[in-house]
Length: 261
Ligand SMILES: Nc1ncnc2c1ncn2[C@@H]1O[C@H](COP(=O)(O)OP(=O)(O)OP(=O)(O)O)[C@@H](O)[C@H]1O
Image (cartoon, rainbow, N blue to C red):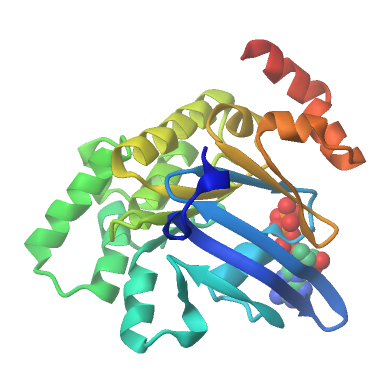
């Protein structure tokens, strides 16, 4: 990646001096992070360090104490109502565990954001849902199935199809491969990489999956001590002198992956 020479308009998400806390528990303290156009950023950190809190704050589901968040160069606090709406439509989110509506079919789930933001005839929404289902590698028959009728891997794909419903430019994935077997997880990683390449997506992926970090992430950011402790390539992680980073990236599991690649 060419983030060193990246122009300002290549920064899709810019977080500056972000502080978030609950009562006396400061979770993020003056955190900084940039995400660049077209990259897959893997976001890791020990359990409870605040990965979900950061993602939810960026998505404005949580309040921040201070700091600025710019998405596509736009400071949401200073945006007009129309700009906020346009911005929201350009973000796709895949929450952990898929988070599909259990009472809706796959097709209806994918159409939820379309109904919320667009005013389209049903036939057009059906066609768009069909395309998204194909895009994520699900069989056409999946359209009329309910989440309870799907495997874990199919639920992830259906949730991804919903995240892509409005053709977002920036996609947030919260532990997308958790709960999948290694083959399912590897296939999902390939799908993410393919979508990045074909649709030009920028991907922010919270993950514990070392395979994903080694195989599809262009850059990695590690959350620790309430900040982004280190960011860069796998090589940067391996060279970083911190006990958690060392045991994570040089531990037994990581070594077996390095041997495979
Ligand atoms: N709504 C909330 N109210 C109070 N405290 C919260 C809330 N949400 C998160 N926290 C606290 O913020 C801290 C970070 O939680 P978070 O869920 O972001 O961690 P995480 O890095 O995503 O962990 P994991 O990898 O286990 O999912 C924890 O101490 C948690 O208790």
